[in-house]
Image 1: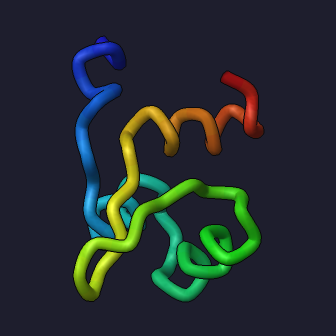
Image 2 (image 1 turned 180 degrees about the vertical axis):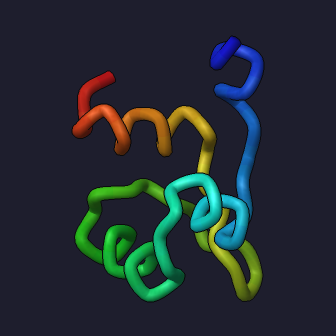
Length: 60
């Protein structure tokens, strides 16, 4: 089931909700390189597969 979401792009808000973390924590993870994200306008975009990788402890 996760395969259908792997290429989905999530916003900052969606990512925070999925991870159940605050925006400041999310931004800290991006700055530290723990989450790979792309700046898009005023917000950030993250692939769903990247959040899964992060939750698995950085393993693919």
